[in-house]
Structure formats: C-alpha cells, structure tokens
Length: 224
Image (cartoon, rainbow, N blue to C red; front, side, top):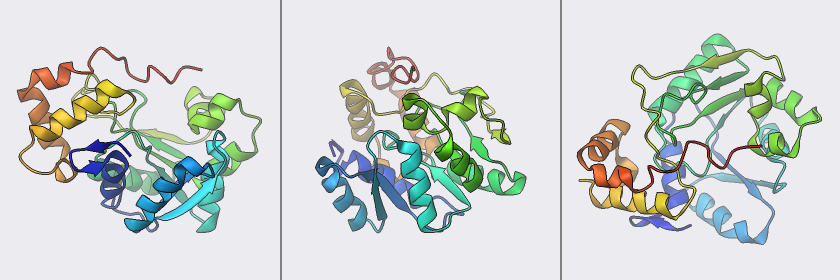
C-alpha cells in the first residue's frame, strides 16, 4: 500500500493487469489475514474480484481461485511488479493458447528486466501441483517444482531479443521503492501509463536512478 507517485504500489499492478489482452476474469488472490482487508478494498474499487485463502500455501490459493470460474488457464502476476508489461503478458497468453502449454514463462532463462515476470499456468498443471506433496517453498512460489523439472509438463519459455536481465524493476525493499519513486518523478507522464520502452529510456538516460537498487541480485530472496 506504500505509494509510488500518487498511487499505492498495488494499484499500479492491478491497473496494468487490466490491460492484458486475452484475459476474461481479473481476480486478486490474497490471504484471510485481517492485514489484507485493505488490499481487498483497493482491488474491489478497481473492479477486481477477490479470493482469500491460505497465507503460505499459494498453490492451493491459486487453484481454489481458478476453480471459481472453471479457468482453463491462470495468468500469474505477482504484487511486487508495479511496472509489469501488459503487452508482454498478453503475448504469453497467446503462446500458451497456441501451443497448449501447461506452463508458459518469461523469466527462465532471465532475459527481461526483473519485475516483468509473468507465468501462464494450465488448469491441469495447477491441479497436479495442488495435489502433489510439495515443500513449503514450492507451495509458496507456485511454479518452482515445474521450473526445476520435478514435474514433467509442457513448458514454453519466452525470451527477449535483447538481454535486459540486468535491470531491476521489482519491489522487495526500501531501495526498490526509492527507485520507483525516482522513476516516477523523472517521467513525463504517469508511471502507470508508461510502456516498457518509455521506462527503459528514462532509466538509460538517468543512470543515477538505475544505481539506486542495482546492488541487489535477481531473486535474492527466492532461495529455498
């Protein structure tokens, strides 16, 4: 709920998510904890449905949320990606449908900026994950068991023509928040409306902004 410019960080995520093509329902899957009541209110004000489930078992939360609409696929957008790329996410939806993939992702191998991560998961893959005896780490991070190859499903990996993986555009700590607020302050129009190309231009023209959080490694808090 901390603000980037004039909007809470989560509002940036949700507003951008609404622009992803090929998606029929938009739903925030959060927890039953009272601290997340404010997330529910924000999401509903932006037109999202809300499902509330287990705090740590995110796999079961996703699976239960998907069952509400008998979803064939789920597009997973995480709350730490306030400048996610809706066009890129839409391209992953298209690839998932065209290739009938169980998991379509754009971060393994990493070629896009950290913070543009998207995965599209089939109903069947979610069902298998929900009923597997997974570690607490795998239940929290949803797709890691597939990414490691523990579960053999059809996986499509989308990569960038230009390696931009050295850019950190994710929100995990105070320095990341400072990065986004400086990015917003140096942008000519509201950050929530800007394209990846526009954001990249601002970062490249202002190396001091990029340096704010550049000492943090990709997925530094993701280790098992």
